[in-house]
Length: 115
Image 1 (cartoon, rainbow, N blue to C red):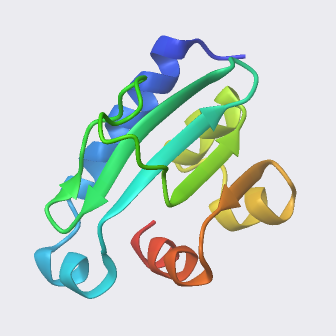
Image 2 (image 1 turned 60 degrees about the horizontal axis):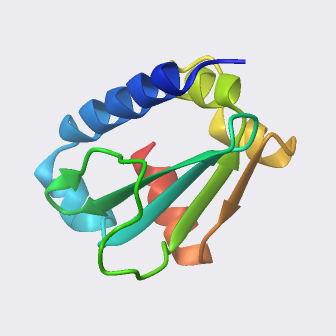
Image 3 (image 1 turned 135 degrees about the vertical axis):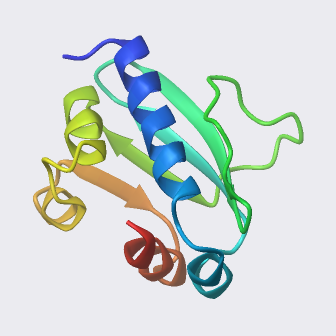
C-alpha cells in the first residue's frame, strides 16, 4: 500500500503530463470536468478540474461550489502509482476490475484519447 503523500505525488505527475498535451489536442478532446479520485485502500479522495488550459492540481478538499464531480475514479493506491508511471494500462485495469470509473461514455472516450 502506498502512502497519501505518494498518491499526491503521482497525481502531481499526472498534472505535469497534461501540461505536455498540445493546445490542438486539448481543444479537440477536452471539455471542462470536475474530477474525483478516490483511493479506496487509504480512504481518501482527491479532487481536481480538467479544462482546456490543462489539469488543475488535485486537492483533498471538495470544490467550494459543492457541485459533484462528473468523472469519478476509484482505485487502490498502488494501482494509481502504477498507472501514472506507465506500468499499468488503464484499459486493462478497467476491464480487470482494478479501476472503477463513473463517467459518461463521451467523457470516457475523450479521456482515453488524452491518456
